[in-house]
Image (tube, rainbow, N blue to C red; front, side, top):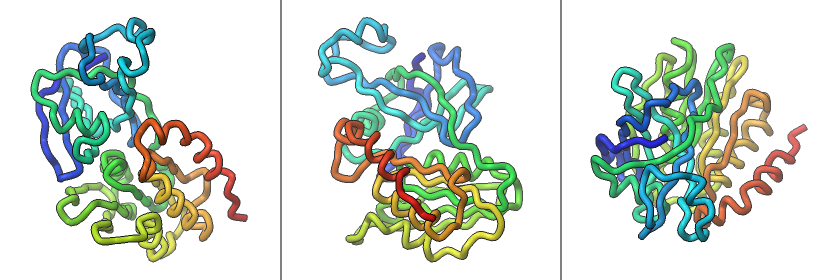
Length: 266
């Protein structure tokens, strides 16, 4: 499946919006979860093929000539216009997804598989907590829009500075805590310290904590260590690791996740 760039928009210095359309989205099915994602394939520089390409044909190419896989959250799907919106975290020219998003122009094409579904805010929760950085902001925005009307919704979102803040809406009773990392030294505990300072939830909490690996781990320790959330009502996932590129992180992510899941809070 593939989409053709219809428009791009710089939401913040660290977040690009890309809207895809075209006949290549004919088989796309609307996702049901907040953090639904598509598995995108970004072509290496100088690739001798273009989108759409045959996945089987490129599989036999040398590694440096094969597409680079990246997961991107579905921000929105418009059934009426058959357009797919992706909000993509960017860090200058670092990273294949962000670099592609920064330079994308109408007519460019992106190939992907999916979407795949994941977290849905628990309908029986008494309140909700969504935590993450720019990489998780698209999913957080969708999650906030999915909750039951009137229920308490707290978002703790880390961005570089005030220029990184975006509008967030919810039918719930929304409270947003923006965390600015500019000028801060202890980044691993930045969001965890804010979460620890929040009032303890009344009743059952549905929590979503995604983003940088060390930061999500620190938040997880607060939530489980202080028994603010039940483990089976917590969605916690590391998207990336500070100091590592995508390939380096992918090579150790499995062990990292196993180590995190092995932590006990009895």
